[in-house]
Amino acid sequence: MTASKVLVSDKLSDSGLQVLKAAPGIVVDYKPGLSEDALAEIIGEYDGLVIRSGSKVSAKVIAKADNLRVIGRAGIGVDNVDVPAASRRGIIVMNTPTGNAVTTAEHAISLLMSLARKIPQATASMRSGKWEKTKFEGSEIAGKTLGVVGMGNIGRIVADRAQGLKLKVIAFDPVLTSDKAASLGIELVTVDALLTRSDFITCHAPLTPETKNLLNKDAFAKMKKSVLIVNAARGGIVNEQDLEVALKEGRIAGAALDVFEKEPTNPEHPLFQLDNFICTPHLGASTAEAQDRVALEVAEQVAEFLTSGSIRNSVNVPSLPGEAAEKLRPYLDLAAKLGKMLGQLGSVDVREFRVTCTGEAGEYGVRPLANAALSGYLERFLEEPINAVSAPYEAKARGISVIEVRELATRRYTSTVRVTVTGEQGLHTATGTLGTSGNAVLVGLDGYELDATLEGHVVVLHNDDRPGVIGAVGTILGKRSINVSRMQVGLHEGKAFALWNVDAAVPEEVMKELRGLSNVRDVLLVKL
Image (cartoon, rainbow, N blue to C red):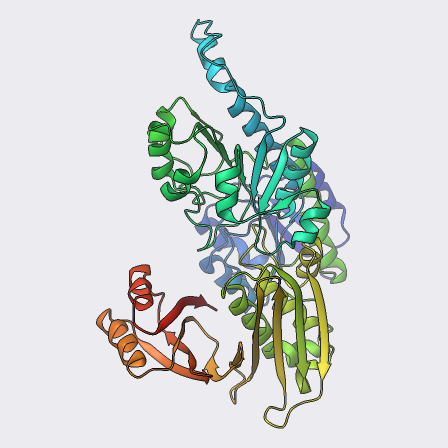
């Protein structure tokens, strides 16, 4: 039996290295600190690669990875891995989604306590020879309200610890049910309610188009002037320019950031000059325990895969029997795209996620397709990467009931996948099938019959069925040199749904212009 070679190209704790070295049939090379070019030069001889955040596993590196079968990332994020490129080459990408959760949550709480009691400022003052006791009067946190943005693994731990500190916890999470929130002792609220009611705000959401600049000048204007803000999630959720102005002008009392829009940050960053601002250099996961934990987890996962074929915490491979994978691949893509579309149509306070399959789509059971659809739906709302394996667990943690249904095929379509998301605020449903070339096609959306390609960027237009709307939309897009590759309209009771496939993302100012047209009810840009 030929030995499998594993390259560790970032610093990894000894405990993780020993797990790899002790695995039968595995040879380990430990070469931390490799540049992208150096990694690309030698990667061709390895079966496995173990990294942290330092190594850049780009398409250039993957193109040279002729023997690579698995990439293991010690940590949550896989931003430094070109996952689509790896997937195209059949390389499994794994991460350790829970290994850093406790450490990151504790860091957020530490930042909040330090900010409330002005500990860094008082330390700096004393080191300069001063005793300014009255200058650093702090804020007590017990009995006050903490607003948590995002209730994933980390957000839930923060909420639990905060309750132990006698804080009242309110939270915003578009895919957490109010029943589940109540069982956690948390009040689920809207973003606006969280902004206006919170004494402290902490962010634990992913960076998505919806959360980018979520805390900006408009948000700061709604907050209490005494509010303290913590972001230990992703840089860009807090608009740093608007934050600087808000802190300078006293619109908010203080802020603590562990993450920034650009890292490493510029030493001359204007926030660093403010007395009511504290920061750390992305230390959320930086504890000895967390480093050991993620090192052990990723080493065990990579070793198990290379020795037995077992797959855990993969971000790009669903759990399927081998004989079904090839046949179901196009249906998995269809289901994921249906989920992604529904995830971008607007929140319904989801309680039930129902996936119905007919014909060939349900031949191997509904569950693989339900998991793919669920993964596509939830990825818009989670800080952690999600896949078809982890999606059911994330849904359960949020109190979402997942229902799988198999029905007989209809006369019109021999095989379909239908996804329905139901909540207190209503429901959304999308039905798809495969086109003649195996591509994903949307044939129904919220009661409208369609025949639209699910690919790339799609402008979804809801309007009254009146003359001139299509022409006006086409004129605006053409004027901005936005190419339309396809357009489909569905009609129902005097209303219309139109899906415009465009070649690139549509700028927000163009979306605003479209929303201002007569007879237009709503316009969304969906990315699939």
